[in-house]
Image (tube, rainbow, N blue to C red):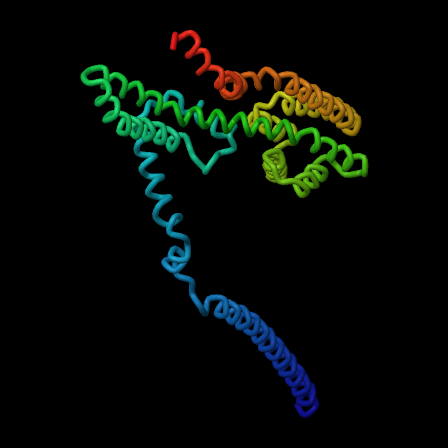
Length: 314
């Protein structure tokens, strides 16, 4: 028994040492976790020490965004539901072609058409009924309302034409920039990024949308086709078609860009020459209406009293 006691005591001491070591290790581990939690809690507390209230955020916005825009939007949407919804898809496509002006949707635009017709009738009815009493005044007021119904359509078509003109005007310079970037060794996506960084116009806005779709996983060819459907520009459509075909066939994009850039520069020069040839014909209208009568009045005006005195017999 005396010989076993030293071994038992030694084993017991080693066991106690291991237990104490494990206890110290777990205590240190728990304290470190607690410290990390305390740091995270302090950061959260500092971040939320001044809680932001929804009401305060709303009051910081301008009056137009808080009250006027929601009210106008609700009124236009309510009026838009009264219009026939057969051409909603067509109006939605036109709004996309116009670049979504003022963030209008199809219902809002239909509401604007109805509101325009009502406003024109209200303004024209008293004037026309006073000038044409009876059924004629009412008929003319209804005709004026129909004209007012199509005034927003005319405005939207003008916006589409202006945007397409801006796209055609910006495309040759953008292709030159793309050609330079691709020649320098950049890929097509990086070259499009450089173009969007250099200019700010409707074409670069469309390129930004294309790059965003590519980053979200859309294939480049599909993103470019979406670009064509959003613009309906002939030059841009042909460029995208050739670019997609070259990508499928494995043709060098650099050569395609060089060819298209030169082709678009020639088309722009031809368009400028065509507009220059049309200028004299367009100038005839203001000349005949405004310039020629004034010129005749200045030249023939002094001779009119002599003609009247001579042929009048006095």
